Image (cartoon, rainbow, N blue to C red; front, side):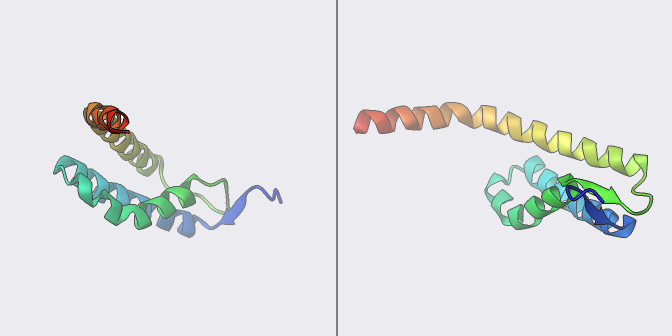
Length: 105
């Protein structure tokens, strides 16, 4: 067996994917509602789910359906897009604070 792959059953992988979908739903809800200050509250749930699903895997049985995988990818892409939009919105504020900080030093 290739040591770089982690053997998992289909059920384990489905649970991990389900946890990630749930975390992404929570994240997207926060983003839609502008509750950016609460994102840190789900970090302990979201990061392990991302890590579990994103790690190399050798599945021992059939995995999630194509539809479920496409849904997962769409939610990841939507979350990335929303975070990038927010990053672009706050970048001028961060730059202004940085310039102000340098002037005071």
